[in-house]
Image 1 (cartoon, one colour):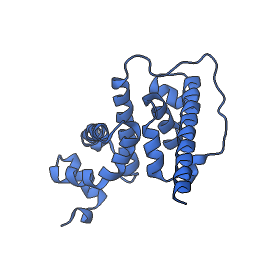
Image 2: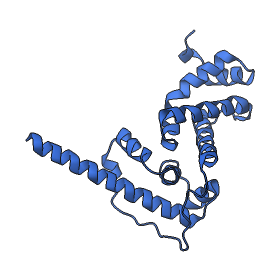
Image 3: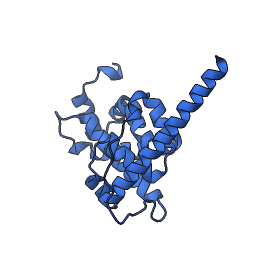
Image 4: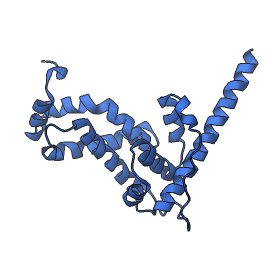
Length: 190
């Protein structure tokens, strides 16, 4: 029997009972999508793999808490994100996020990210500082509110807004620079 032939309920039951075969099937089934999640919150593939493995250990330890009939992928994803946040907190030395005195209102600007591919965006997000990357991912990708981001990271709502604005500004500069280089290279070959 191939791994893809197993039903989700069967895999979950096998994991609850500690079956290594079922843990391996679950891990392989979600490895790719969850590695992408971990990559967004870390600096490189090795660090992402560490977070992924730590999170899967939590998945296997807590699989008995999963409610059958709900979305297993979403449940695992939440564990991945929370593990990445924990990893970030452990790694942060001193205050990595700059506190501001007044909340900055979020400015809606043309979203130039919508014109880019996911891999190109991920590569640029990876270049952000850990504080900006964390807020950007939680707010933009995961859909948390600034209040929720603040609670998760132990910062104020204003700091979350500030760091998001700064992350977006840095990303826009990177994108513009990338576009100017692409145009210049195109002109050199014309």
